[in-house]
Image 1 (cartoon, rainbow, N blue to C red):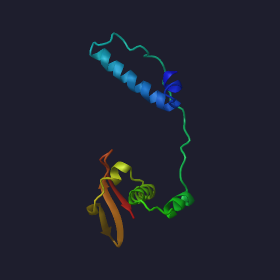
Image 2 (image 1 turned 90 degrees about the vertical axis):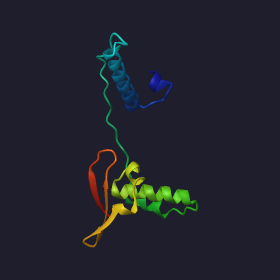
Image 3 (image 1 turned 135 degrees about the vertical axis):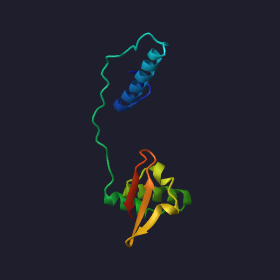
Image 4 (image 1 turned 180 degrees about the horizontal axis):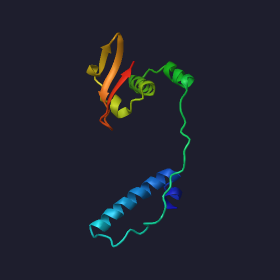
Length: 124
């Protein structure tokens, strides 16, 4: 109740916090800091979510917005690049010129993904 009430967390966010807390308590039991986990049998189920998405017209409207602040231009362009390539912010922030290569008349982004370590090759 505290997480949903006072903290105003959504159901799934509260479940993530409780799962983390349970793992911490399990660790404390392993290290003899606690005798038992207080809520070992409580089922912590996530609820299905309907993630929204941007369609082509949304992206075009965002692309065509006139921005005078150079920082906002950079943020907008990085966000659009992320939308078109599927790259995360963590990957885009690590991009350097050497990650852009030309192969068979086509430009590609080639980089090792930060989260997974998987080599990605994305056409531009």
